[in-house]
Amino acid sequence: MTSDFATVPAELEAALRLKTVQYYVTQRPWLSTASSL
Image 1 (tube, rainbow, N blue to C red):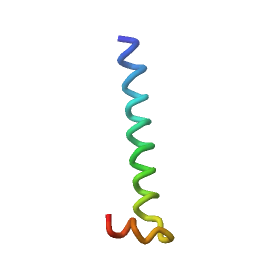
Image 2: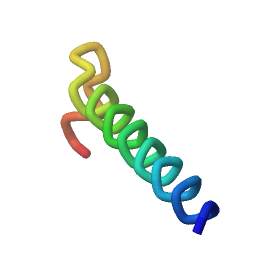
Image 3: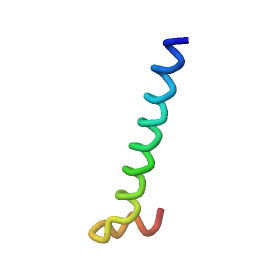
Image 4: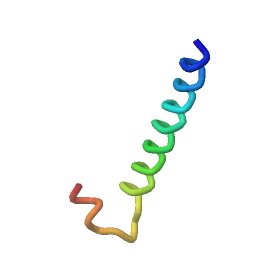
């Protein structure tokens, strides 16, 4: 039970971080190749 409470927030944080990284990567105005993606 303790492992579940420790794993879920970790996965949630990882997912949030990944989403934030993807947002910044796709919204970078200085990288024209991101627009084609």
